[in-house]
Length: 264
Length: 293
Image (cartoon, rainbow over all chains, first blue to last red; front, side, top):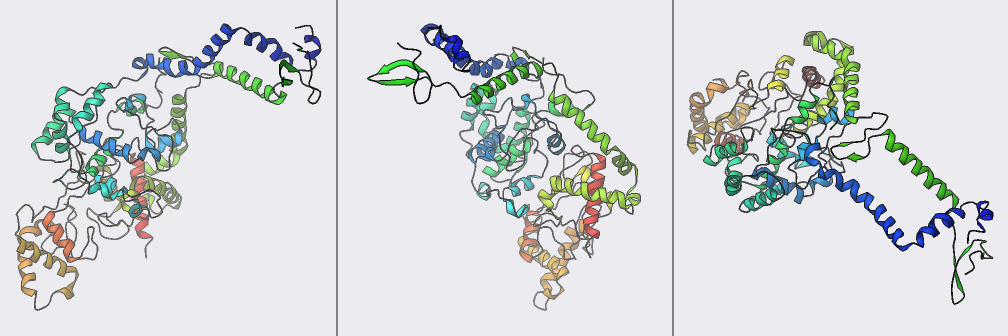
């Protein structure tokens, strides 16, 4: 079958399939093995780094977990599809670092299940929006045209009227713990009370939140009304903590003359 | 099987398979596609060696070019800082009095201040700095803490009612809700305050109420707002006799304010912005004001 190879070289590409393909195609086991090898490249490239993820994610001992109220706000953020227009990932580009702050580190998304990095910026990046505006400013951005007349962001005014469902928060915390977020038994038991307390400054539950989740926890009437816990409370509490769960990103870039070591 | 058989129309070889007279053509991949495929493969393999690519357990192949995006962006930031250093230095060192008449520096303030304002301040104070309901207008002459450039810069630095240790602190107590004043007193003091900026409001019918409100004002409000109600910039108490209102100057809103109190908030920008940036913003805000007739 190869006696006509010589003339077909002169005809160019017809020779290559003749040589490799025909041979391979006719060895059934060899061909199966080749298919497996090629198909597994994509899988290996995605899966293999996960085996060593504990060593490759930066250390951040000060990393906090989301409080129940912040977690509820995160769920609203997901429910309303905020991630479709807002990313939460400052990239290693000069204009982004100058505008938003230090570039995002992997450890900052450590407790994000699922992560909300996003891939589209119709609106600005929100990775470091926590603390940038007042609570009222945050809640008012949810009525966008009052702030920027030409904004095309939908309004979310009803969040301030919807009371927040807090009874099932222990289950949410439990689910997060099942996938690796270190919530303690005590945090799970008190999730509903803590969610109430974080939005009700001065109440007994309020001081407990700080005890359980650290002194950095922001306890305020996030929607401006201390008497009830609304979805606006939860969402603003979540927005105000974005980028503030750890200072790791700020520490790394504090001394620009010493760029952070590549991850070893 | 006749492997060498050629299709008379296309001139291509057949696979030699035949089904009831129908033969399968073995058309080769077009040469252009093949060349493109080879080039992309060569490029990909070269790229593996030049750039960081393959994960190797706890590390990765670093590549011959030694490219590190984090190092690049750090370098770019250093370069950008160096590029700006000449005028940033001047703005940082010069006093506000020196900068204000300097056209060159003020044109920098205008362009760079506009960017900074849009990113950091416009969300509350509006793109034009005119504020809106519940946010102060920065273009008028009415200031809670003082409107000269130094004071505005200081307010930006520490914020109002923030966690900053030197934060400005001001709170309008909730006189009605906390039971400091009864409903009648709240209404009368609101009427009095309203009459200060609306002299026509006071008529022979309500003069008694307004007079009673004045009494309440002198005992409960004058400590911060002053006996003449012109406010006190040391404690951030607004002037109640003018036409500028943050939360609204109609009678109903004044009743709401006296009843429920107000607890405004302005973030501290000490950590987020550099000294020079705060200075630029203070000057920019100043320029918003002087541009008005």
